[in-house]
Image (tube, rainbow, N blue to C red; front, side):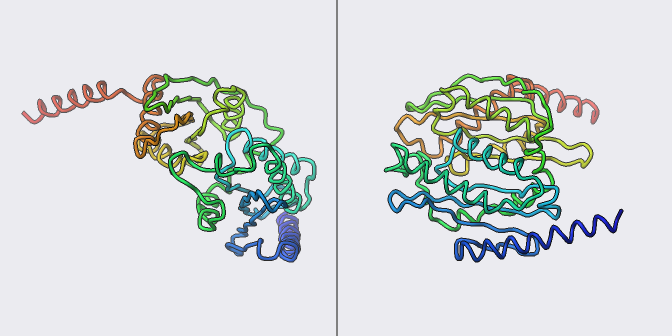
Length: 321
């Protein structure tokens, strides 16, 4: 049995080497080797149209059992790619994997992303891609290589769990989604949404359900973060998404970590009102998230926490006396 597994791993490695060599010759400088030992690569993909020109970066990790038994782990970096469009593109890549079991699929993925860019650039609003490609507060250059090559460590950490997103045979129920009270400041409105999630597939299901709501789908940003506790490994599976609001997802995830909440996903929708809020936007995002966590019983309110702290302090005081 061990000998068979070794042979399969060697066959997969050889298939990966041949595929990477082919992609390198096809795409030239667009193809980039980030960490050959860890099988981490990326490719910068552009639409075929000269004007307007949309660009995305596909970051890839090849597991040891790809292509025979596992899909590539991937991340798409494009500041303009948000909401339903990101879900649609991700679904199309997963469909390619399901339709070509055991086959090398990176070329198909790259060309599917390129087709998506061409379709996007031909849409009526594509003449001004910058309008939808940036945070309302901060411009983002799609050609910034540093942005594209960032966060590979986070991508690498999620390697073991990535298959959970893509298992077509795993049947799970859509979690109940709660919606919090909206907050408005200078015509920008923020609204939190919360769901109990125990797997990455449920995270995806929640996002797809939210984007079926036209109002939520029309939000300028839908920032989210989640934490799932894995009892067998005594560790957390966690991730976040800025959705064009630079650094907002990381701040939201940091809040969940500080509050030590488990098996929960929080999405904060923001509808930009035309007036820059500066750092206040992060305050509103995190306050909305905290409020819905309190409302749904995941954490104590500030008053309850203060009362609890006071009781503990009095109890300790009595003991010392």
